Length: 274
Image (tube, rainbow, N blue to C red; front, side):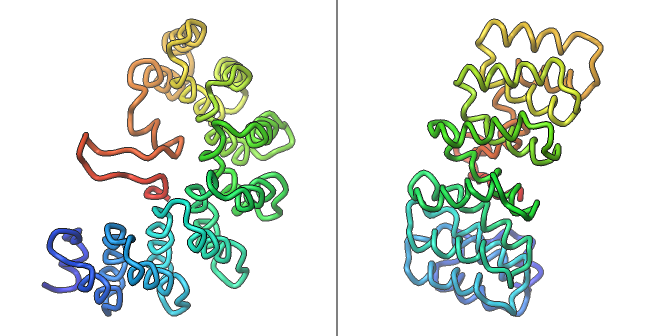
């Protein structure tokens, strides 16, 4: 099978074992190397695989896309101090391309519930980061700890409500507050934005966020009103989705929530769309 055929065949799992996939991470075709790096997610219990994926990330001669795939593969390991250190090093390495650093920041999401030091660094970057791209990446990563961490909730709410912040920054804060929608003040903030927000992208996100509280009678009234009245089509459609199809892949992906395609289908991680 040729390199291009391997790339398009989404090879990986049943037909190629760990050793074969490791060999393919050194294939001349970058598409094959990227596919092999992704397929090795199924073998991350192996120290050989973990070490090789770290080598791929560290290889300055490797293409950006293959190194990005290495970050995504590393991110599936939970509560792993070595992975956390590797991702933090990549995120802070000014020699790396900005997209690679930003992805490394996002990939820390899986470690934040287990590593308070990493969480503090990411929270600080989200609050005061000087680079817009890295700051938005930090806001993205905080979704993983917004449900039960009051300090994170407060920081995200403050950024979302701030009129001095760029809209793109406020949207990232909104998206990461979805897991905190059980909190009444978060719910009320989303209701206010959904009903009368001045920016379309913020209103859209707030309407989708209300899907998390669709059983609330007040939220139902708001969504039904938005679905029926003469709002922009995107807002009306979002209200219909929030009311009638809260498990829609569009909503799950918008709020960085991993999901499976069908009950036993492939798992789509929060980073897969990044």
